[in-house]
Length: 329
Image 1: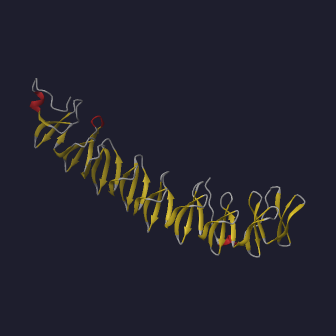
Image 2: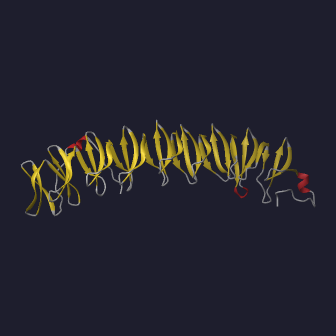
């Protein structure tokens, strides 16, 4: 269960209230004590009392806080400006405007140098130190030193960190995985979208950048990825070939061949998912037949091209006993 602990000056004066438990807090003439039923366990001598654990109470005496048991035995001496529970057998202890962590024997676990604590899950707690953010675990051990402006859980393996307005990724050991040079990250099916200004790029699941953040839009297609940049269209093929945005549009797709017919200045060519790229040199191009060939018009001449980019004349296709061109079987 997500929980947050906010440290403010308001906490310097602990609120006093009772719990519907066997041991309860009672008040007499501005002083507070503890009783069970009609039996007084602790005489009303404290300025405030608050239950902070099983049979443990934060008690204020002469303006300072400590921890006592329900029977009045002192567990943590009255030497702190504030005290509150952190995790089992651990307490946040305030000295001046800073907070640290002590155990129930008053051993220092974390020095009183921090100004904020915020649990981000059941195990990790965000801490603030000199305006920077780090992480400790629920045992009070420093996991990631407070070096960042912000730390946000991103995936089970990575945290997103902010430094000087830019974002990067670190792992659970604090090792930098992606330098803080981006404006944001988003998860995708195959990895991560990275942002720089209003441009985006792509990283794989291991945080390896394979498309720089220079595109206006990226879409999935039968080719792999369609890349949009400054009004032009390009591709990143399934085989990992980058075809820079230089086309006006896709005229049609033929998924059975992993193929897209593209147009540039009214000339047509095509791109395949396997990385084959035929320059837009045709005035017209038909859909590809089941045998993987299409009719094309080039410089006013009717020709045939197969889905691997091999050009043939119509006569070659029509001649009897002519072996089919490579790639058309």
